[in-house]
Amino acid sequence: MLRRCVRAAAAACAAALVCAAALAQEPGPTGPKYRLTVEAPTKELRELLGKGLQLSRWQDDAEMTPELLRRLADEGVREAREALAAQGYFAALVSFSLDRDREPWALTLHVQPGPRTVVSTVELFFTGPGATDPEAVDLLRVVRRDWLLRPDQPFTQEAWNEAKREVVRSLSSWRYAAARIASSRARVDPETSRAALEVTLDSGPAFLFGSVEVRGTKRYREEVAGNLSPVKPGGTYDRKVLELYTRRLLETGYFASARVDIPPEAREGGATPVRASVIEGNSQHFEGGVSYNTDAGPRLELSHRNVDLFGTAWRGKSQLLLDQLTQEASYNLDSPPRPGATWWTASTGAKHSIIQEEENTELSLGLAHSWAGAGSPTAVLASAVAEEQRISGEAADHRHAVYFGIRIGFRDTDDIVLPRRGYFGQVTAGGAPDELSTRGFHRGTARITLMQPLGRNDDLLLRAEGGIVVARSRQGIPSTFLFRTGGDQTVRGYAFESLGVRQDDAVLGGRYLAIGSVEYTHWFAPIWGLAAFVDGGNAWDTGDFDPVFGVGFGARFRTPIGPVRLDVAYGEEFDSWRLHFSVGFVF
Image (cartoon, rainbow, N blue to C red; front, side):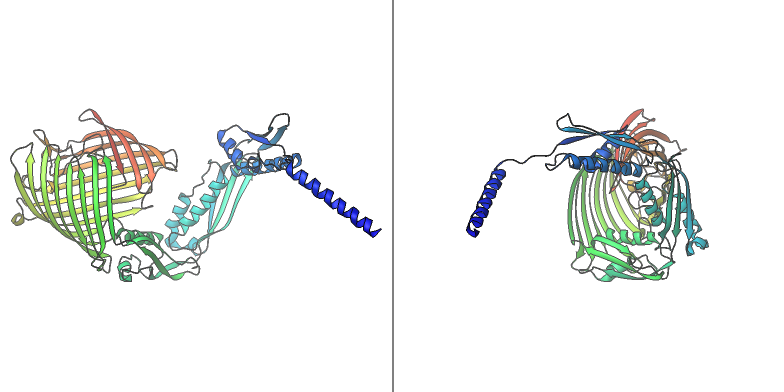
C-alpha cells in the first residue's frame, strides 16, 4: 500500500514538472495597453498633467490588468486635482472615461480647471528683536516692498514657496542672520477664487561679525586672503560685506572658488566668526579667444597670467589684443594684497590704433597704489605717455605727458553680476605739469549708472557721463587724455568714437564730454526681455554743447557673465541705423 502511494506521488510530481515546462515555453498573457489623453483648455495644463501623472508612466506595462487600470485612473483623478490646486485651480472638476473598443484602450482625462485663484491681500508681521529695532526700520520696509507674491497675481504653490524663501533671505541679509518664518497661512476661498496670505517672520537675535577664519590655503599664506577682508570684528552682520569679500577673493586670480559665510549652526546671535573657505587655482593661466564687436569687428585676445611669480604671490599678466581698429600689448605686475586690501601695480604697454582717420602709436608706463572698495578699486596713480599722432596721413605730431591722478570707484547694487536696483560709477581727477609734458593740463571725469525696477518685470536704467580737460588748447595733449564718444556703451546709433572734433576726414579728441541715456526694459521671461532707449551726448573742444541723439530698441539676455545686449539704433545726426552688441556693465 505504501509503495503504491509513493509511486502515485512520484507520477503526480512528474506530471506537474511537464506542465510547468510546457507553460514556460508558451508566451504568457499580456495585460491591456492604453493611451492617455488629457482634455484641458490650455496647452500648459495638458503638458503638466500629461507628463506628471502616474497614469502616463504605466501605459505599456505588460502586467497591467483592468482592475489595476481602474485604480490607477481613480488615483490619477486625485493626482490631477492636487496638481491643479498647486497651480491655483482649487475648484477644478476632473473625471475620466475609458474606451475599451479601441486598440490600445483610450483613457481620457477630462479637466475643467475653473477660475484660477489670485492673491487678494498680503499681511506681513514681524516678531523678535528686529520688530522693535529702530535701526531696522529701513530693512523691514525693504522686506515689505520686495515681497514677491502681490495682490492680483496668480496664487500657485511654487510662487508661494518662492516668496517665503525670498522674504527670509531679505530679512536675514542684515543683522538678523537667523531670521525665519514663524508661521504662514494661505486662506483660499474657492467660491471667490481669492487667497488671503499671512506670514509672520521671527527676526531672531542680532548678529555681530567676529574674527575671520581663512580655510583652504596651501600655496599662499592665510594673510593673502585675510588682507582682503572688509569684515570689521564687532561690526553689524551684513551679507553684502560677505559677498564683497567673496568677490575680492575671486578677482585676485589666486582662487578657483571662494565662499564666505558665518557657520550655519550659529543661532544664538552676538559675535559670530566669519569663515572664508577657498580652493586655490592653478598659478598660471593661458587664455585665448576670438570675439566679435560691432564697433571694431573680429577681435583676437591672448593672455598669460602668473599669480605666484617665483613663489612670492606677486601677480603678472601679459595681454595681446588685435582687432581692425586697435593693436595693443600690455604687461601688469601686482603685489600681493597688503593689510587694508591695498596693493601696488606697475604697468607698461604699447598701442597702435587707426580710428576715424586718426592714427596713434602710444607707449606708456604706470605706477598705482590701489585699495579695494565696494566698486572698482580706488587708486592714486602716476603714468607717463608718449604718443605719435598722424591725421589723414599727414606728418607725425609727437606728444608726451606725465600724469598724476586719483581714481575713485563706488557701487551699491542688489546683485554682483545681474543688478536691477542700485548705482555704480567712477570719478577721476588729476593733471600733468607743464615741466613734464608737451602741454600741461588738468583733467576730471565722472560716470554714474542708476538702476530702478518698475515692478516685477520692468527696469529703468539711467546713465550719465561727463569729462573736462582744463588747458589753453588741446594741441600737444596726448589723445588718451582727450574725449571722443559713440558706440555700444556710449551713444548708440554712431560708430565707435565717431563723435568729437572734426578735422578734414578725421575725428579727434576734444576737451569736453557729456553723455546721457535713458533705457527701459520689459522682461518677458526670467532670462530675456526687450528694451527701448534714447542716448544723447557729444565730445567737443570749443563753443557750446551741441548734443546728438540715438534712439532704438534691442533684446536683452541674462547670462552668468552679465547681461547680453543686441541693439538696433538710429543716429539722427547722420541719418543712419547701426547694430550694437555688448556684454556686461562698465563698472
